[in-house]
Amino acid sequence: MKWTTFSAVALTLVGLLALAGWGIAGPAENPPAHPEVEGAVTPDACEVCHQEVTPEVHSEWYDSQHGMLAVKCFVCHGSTGEDFTKDPSIDRCVGCHADQVETMAAPFMKDKSCFTCHPAHALMAHLPVAVEGGDK
Image (cartoon, rainbow, N blue to C red; front, side):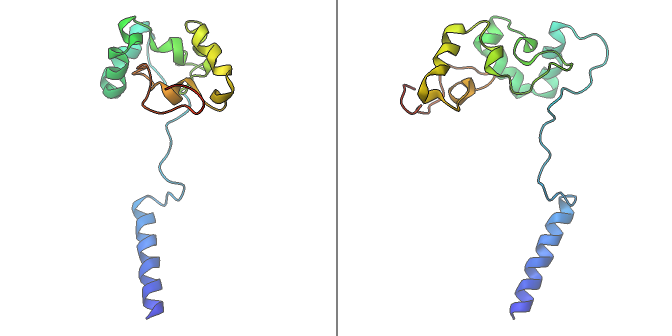
């Protein structure tokens, strides 16, 4: 009986791995580099493409303060070239948000980023999470 249970579990696992394309490491993460872009890349090219490719991200950005102020994707993410970053560092924020970035030096902000409290792209005032030792 024990062997039958073991066999059933083993066959189930093998079947799941086969269905997943033998992907033991799990689903592939988003690439760290921007996909190749054909033709001229204009400031509006990001918006036009992302309206189609990632409409939810585009909507979050469009309805945010950055969208209303026409802060384009490349300001935070860089170009589609070698300076592209999927997850912008605080260095990209300091140009416009120096006072806010200065608060990141507080001890309770250690190991946190802007996006711990502010949702990426939507950039609302704060996520409903408490920041240990500080305000929401």
